[in-house]
Length: 270
Image 1 (cartoon, rainbow, N blue to C red):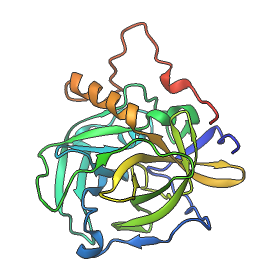
Image 2: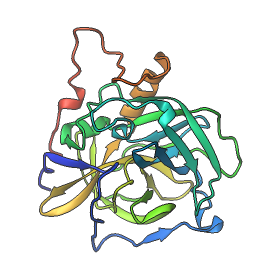
Image 3: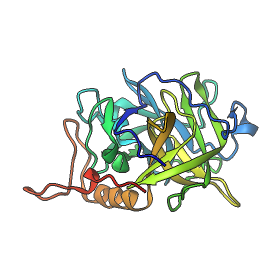
């Protein structure tokens, strides 16, 4: 597979066209309680005066989304008070609504505004702490699994342009390639899809294997791009445990003064 174009468009607040591939399954609108059963942990992450992203519950207190969703257009970290998470939002009703107490992007994520270099996408994840835990039996956190391999079939649950009031499920799309932490897929992605959980949908409960970050182009085809979660998420959670409430005005990092991380600056062909 040819290397991914080095310039990618982030999806948080940009209008883009749906991605259409013969291999994809159609989107299923999860508009009723029965259709949405099991997916209540996915919600719309509203951002005051900015639009929204998609996020998913990974513990009773933490949600996972894309790191670029927590920055403004000037690459400044947003205030947690600007966010509201609506779990299982369908047609104006949410299973649970929570404000955000604090947030943290991956400490090695570099915000580059509405466009991003490929080598930054491996760290494009953030966790947000809810002001109160969600302990409803109907809303269960999702487990996180190892990153998928090339050729694996995955699914995505997302909000987005044209589906702002209820999530949609794409049960079948394919991992086309893996490149230094970035996962290249032919999954549907539109404005608002940033942060959408990518699931393994084999036997048993669905598990999150990636988070939608951007769209790009390879071999003349438009593709969606996600990040690996296994190591970056563990690094992010360890970082999150060491810091106080995230403050607006810049990225927080545990990197010592005088050091510069190079982890997010590598991009290797598969």
